[in-house]
Length: 360
Image (cartoon, rainbow, N blue to C red; front, side):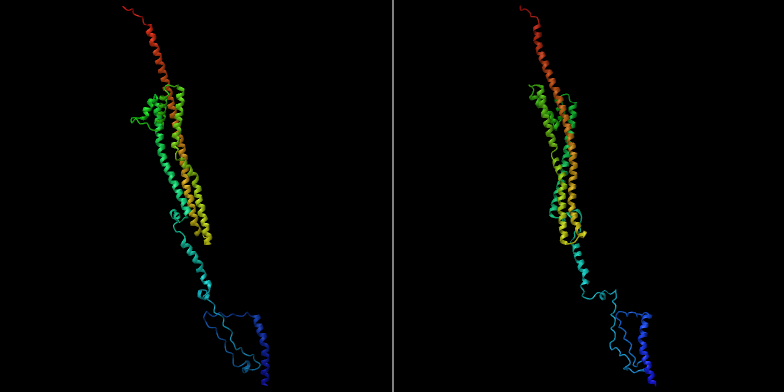
């Protein structure tokens, strides 16, 4: 009787257990146990009871067979603070940052650190260097011409103005020549040449007419003025050439330097500004030197052009004064000749009017 009751209870328990498990899964959420710490051993499953429910012996045919293998332990979670655990040993991704940083470090090591004008000149290409040297020489020529012409123009204008004042105060061409020569008796300057040319032509044309003498003197004075103007303008044409061509020469150096920079970009396969900027700066330095050479040349040329025009105007005033003195001198000479002829004619008339004394 007892065995019959135990068998019935066991059959009821076996029938109720699957239904109770399904109900527990749907009614209450499963509670997750916390993950064991890294490096901790997984807990071993609890040993199965020797006896079955209701005191049945192990291995009873009505009981399920126990599992012989334990569930595999969960792998230990890697700590984010441990790079060795997060990255497997020998992986190529760990060497990627170092390999990518190596070209940048090498490129920075080859960059020029001296970006001063002299440093950029020394690091520039040979063509850009030649352009810079040529422009620097042109600038030196410009300032040399400026210094020489300033002194020459100042001295020439001072002499011309002083000589014109002497011509205005003089009463004749000869007295003007003596005043211009001064105490040293040395006539210097373009105005002194004008006076000397007028005196020479007057002496050569002493037996000729006044009109022809004045015309020949005017031609000689105009030639002296033109020669003095050309002599004073000597060197200013070079200033005009430098002022008009220096910017284009500097632009040629800039184009050449930027072309080399683009070639370097294609070879280094990088567009980093630290790699490109030095070459572009060296190229732009050529344009800067070209402007430094061109701008003063243009300004100095314009100043000299105005100064030479004023000097020629002073010479023109001197020529007018010389012609005025020559005209007065020729007229005085003509009157003196006329008076002398009149006196010569008057002497025989007086002699004829005197009474004759009879001889004894």
